Image (cartoon, rainbow, N blue to C red):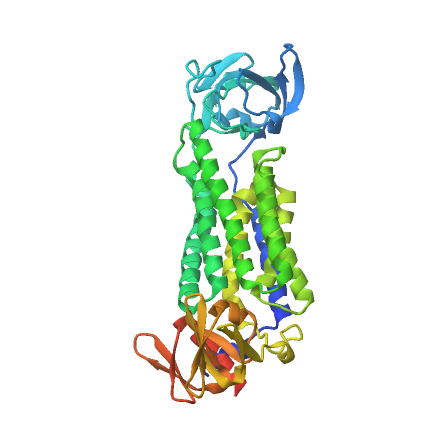
Length: 491
């Protein structure tokens, strides 16, 4: 049995594929939110008290401690019992873009740099810090952990600088353990391979969707590299701004690439304006006040994905279905992830979800779209080309053409009688109109399946189509498997 025959026998229906993708996203959500490997944490500080300008301790929480030109004093209350875990060496770990002096029941137990009222007075501390807690201070009872912190070297406002305060088994330093990033590193490898391959497919076969998803993946890789960098280098806290900027640029570029890809793929006139508005609203969102930098970043990304998701949902209702019709599933899964935990979305699910989004495009070639009720009807297919030349219009029946050749922003319409005409639109734009029986076989060519005599090959992965009029059309090796199946169906 040939590879194309196997592909046809194993083809899924559109809805089977959508169900499969939904299940894969659900598994991704479970993995990122239920099985993510964390540090062994005996205690994590969230609720705290902050010293206000009147010298009074007031209730607050970790997410409300932002940068401040003055020294800030905060304290946590912790109850230690007589369990065995407190009898082993313990570290107090704190992380975030600030310098701090650390006190346990009034006794200084470590300095993350040193706090200061001015830039010159402050010593810059590392982004992550570990301080040994002497065993004599770990007696059962109520204890106070106080931090005296400052952010004099931050250049940009940060509304939530206190990333974490933990008590853990003893760690020599605060640098995050690389073994907790095994999963992200594996995902990074997968993203690199899939993204590069998608770009190659898009460039060779003239597939805008694959090119766009490949570009999207490369920008997500930038975000993931910025995230993993904290495990490789325990950099001074003010460098965290550079990491945040790189991550923000990567995430915004990924979302905008997705919107641009949809803009190029969709030929529906109603879709163009919502896509542009979606991009503008997302960018504006970055300048609106919100509770936390992570929330703002997550909201901006969702707004970027939301516009194309809504458009493809509408197109699906109109029975115009393609692979990007799965975007609403990705968007819903991302929203669920954010609602469960913004941190886990930005640290984990965003990358797994992107891996699924890019990888799923390859699976789409195994979906039988021709026999679906939701596939484009033959009556809706373009039956004639209208070519404008010197102020006049010439109408040519699609069935009279054997191939279309991209010529920059124009397209050469090649007729069976040997004549050619230059169409005013590009090849991609013409193929988006759905010319009857035409299929893209190369970045520069599309052919009429009814005029194909045979598919031939030569050593070195070289393929071409021999047409009934003896003409030869090159075929991208990335289109061969799909083309064999289409030829078998057409016959």
